[in-house]
Amino acid sequence: MAVFQGLPDQALLRILTAGVRQAERQGTVLMRTDDVADCFYLIIEGRVEVRDREGVPLTTLDSSNVVGEMGLFAPDFKRNADVVVIRDAVLVHGTKLPHQLPRAGTDPALESRLRLTST
Image 1: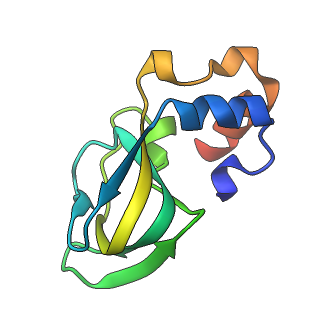
Image 2 (image 1 turned 120 degrees about the vertical axis):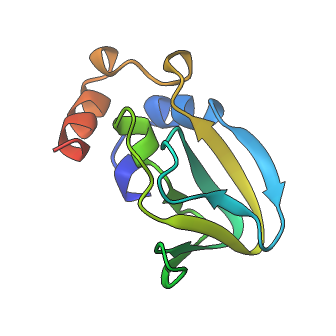
């Protein structure tokens, strides 16, 4: 979870507890190219594949990885790939709703991380 690495436990806990744990079956499309990036997924179990517009696999991600995290940091960001479950998965589905995220101004480490990821 490189984007979250180094954050204080309290900030990380607020991000993760804002999410909902869910199970998804192989073949489920979690994200589609050009959708508004309004959520992210933390992979607890299973595996997902990131694919380009033509369906060509770009990478696979498994437990302890996060996919779609730009949805946390970039308002109105559009997805640039599809994400498909390729092995039944347990995920934490998080959104960027303002009341669900730590306030950057109250957490210097998170504020710094947000600045770094948005440049």
